Image (tube, rainbow, N blue to C red; front, side):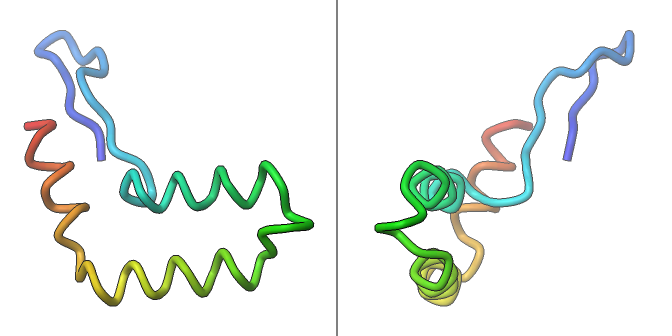
Amino acid sequence: MISLHQDFNVKNSWGSRPKYGKELLAKYKADPETYTKDMFYNDLQIYYAKNRGKDAVQEILELL
């Protein structure tokens, strides 16, 4: 999602996952030997299941 100024320059943007999901991805990319792909996907799915999109909605609302 992006938000534009009246002159069509980007004002804000929101990516493919909430902040915590991005943190998990960064953790995986930093050390995939210790924090494996399976561990990353498992932790991400648990986060999504427990959070039920609340963080994503809150982050988007903060951009508006």
